[in-house]
Structures are given as C-alpha cells and as structure tokens.
Image 1 (cartoon, helix red, strand yellow):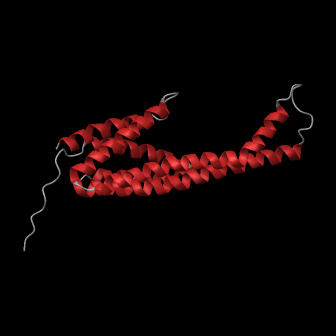
Image 2 (tube, rainbow, N blue to C red):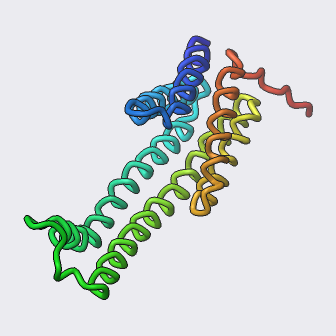
Image 3 (spheres, helix red, strand yellow):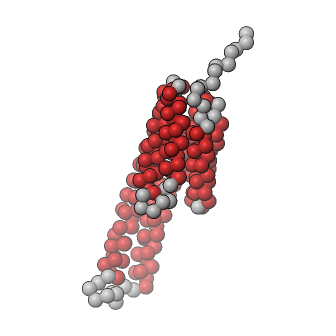
Length: 200
C-alpha cells in the first residue's frame, strides 16, 4: 500500500527531525516540523488499516501536549510575573542597585518565583503524562495491526520517560524513545499482514 510506504518515510524523517530538538536556534522549529510529519504518517497508517482510533489518539496526544504547555506558561506568568517585575524594578533602578531591596523581601520574591516555576512545571508534567498515555494507545494499535512490535516499545518508553521527566532521567528515556521511533517507522511493513485463517 502506498499509504504505508509513505508513512514509513514520513514518520522516519519526522522522527529524525524531532531528535534535533537540542539544536541551537532551529531545534524547536525542526521538532515541530518533525511532529507534524509523524502525525501525517500515523494518519496514513490509520487510513491504511481502517482504524481511525490510531490517529484520533495521536491527535489527542498532540493537543494535550500543546494545551499543557500553554497552561503551564499561563500558570507560571500568573503566579510569578508580579514578583519578577518587582525584582527587576528594584534591582535595575536609574542609580543602580536599589537600597530598599532588603533581605526578607528578596527571599520572599524569589520564593514566589520559584513556586510559580514549580507550578508551571507540574502542570506541564501532568499533561505530558496524559499525552503519553494516548500516544501509547496509538502506537499500541499500530503494533497490533501491523505486527510492528517496536511501536509498542516506543509508546511504553514515551510513557516511562514522561513519568520520570520530573527527576530528569526521563529526558534520557524520551531521547531513547525517539531513536526507537525512528527505527520503528523505517522498519514499518509496506503491506499489512495477511489475516490469519481461522480453523473451525
């Protein structure tokens, strides 16, 4: 099927672009482009096997990731912007450092900013976990439909990585997940497996 053949290369190339996220300046743009290609690849797989839930779960996963990031930023700004503005205005006065910038006030302002940062991270973390659950469902369906076990492995690695991202080692696992995802797409069969004949 052309759909599976296209998905093979679109998903593989897209996954490689996602791997370039750490690249300076253009990394985020490459990641977004790669994510779009992977989503298109998954849509082609869903169409080829006649299972719309494959793409629906992928789409929900992406939406949750975007919404989680936006809400995380909003929470961080809502809780910490005022404190940051006070620090900025007190430190960078016309005559240099402000003499009114006392110790207790400094501690409280930095504490408020730290709380805002942690709250934003917590929101993004929770949304990332839920997003990875839907991604795992999508990849699990691909694995079952096409007999491509690496997709199930990729989905599991994404979930484990998202859960452990709060202790940083999760980012290493997520990096490995993208590598496995590359291999999974490039080894994707171009024809769905023949249905098993049932004996009566």
